[in-house]
Length: 441
Ligand SMILES: [Zn+2]
Image 1 (tube, rainbow, N blue to C red):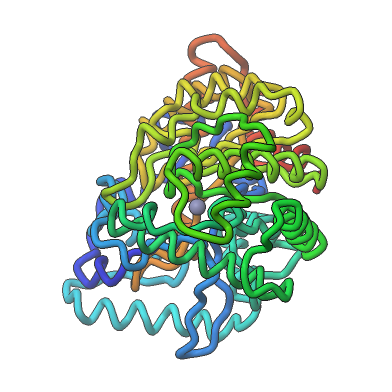
Image 2 (tube, rainbow, N blue to C red):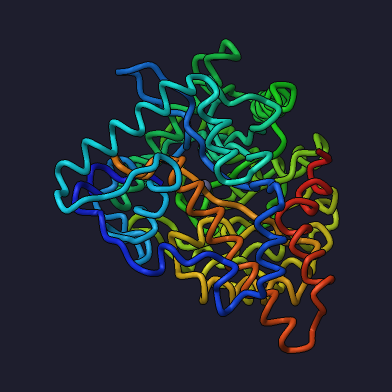
């Protein structure tokens, strides 16, 4: 998520909480905290920015960026003045604030630019080193400068394939949808153009072949998973339509006017299942945004992980692995229930934006008490504002996620659910080993 220049000069508070190290945290066992700090993490979900030359902005860090959204409806932890920001600036750039906020702002920019310049193309790798992250899964339309394939693994987006028809009705629902659907149409148009098509094919089979070819191109281009942000566009309830019915809708409306919402949903549902099936064939786990979303028009009830259960129960899709992003927040219990399905995983990325560590840790504990081998660390690091870049959100996300994991595991130790050795072992699984198993690296 990125918001426009909202977080400006005033975001310079400082509290005791900023300096607290995990080992002195009363909620986290000291030996466990030190073990978790030493683990080189695999980050299941983030949006790193590429190195860019001045004047050139990186637009590829998300298919649906929050730029242009009027009201982000941001929960309290990440609002202007958050103590997290000062802590990250100090750790990353050695920035210490003084009383004068305006002077601070330019000093901060100076220090950041100095490091960016010094590191050059190695800046993204330097950022990962600061958060003790070995590998970051990069949700991007395309990779870019400095995002080297040994440290950054590509996760392209697939939503645009679901909406090939006239989207006028979808866009008219609210101002945010207008921005989102316009962007999806541009991305689909780009892929059609790459395939030397000026328009979607008239024949449904040809459209499906076009999608498969693009997914294969993603795979050969280094993709390790596919990402859906569908909850920003419609609900997560995916029915199981007959192919003939989907083909009929496509045949009629690919050439003419707008389908009814029911007809269009049927086609989208069929296409989603088609892509999920193909993702299984290509061994690309399917990532689904499953949580509260940015923007005041986001429909939370439409993002409940239980809506995906029929998809997880489909025997023909059991070769496809699904990853619920952001722990299904706030439906943590529901998400914990879903990871009992053999092909379903989750990450708890983005918790820093959504809640504070003590509450986030309660959710993490629910997941660990369901299926610890299916729980993945993620930061959801992302360019956020003029003063909070992806380096800051990565650093904050990595610290908070380790803290949440520590609190959850310490609570389980206190309640006799596991001993220290077992807690450390689960720490390694969540921060690193579960992802290695899932992606094979
Ligand atoms: Zn994200």
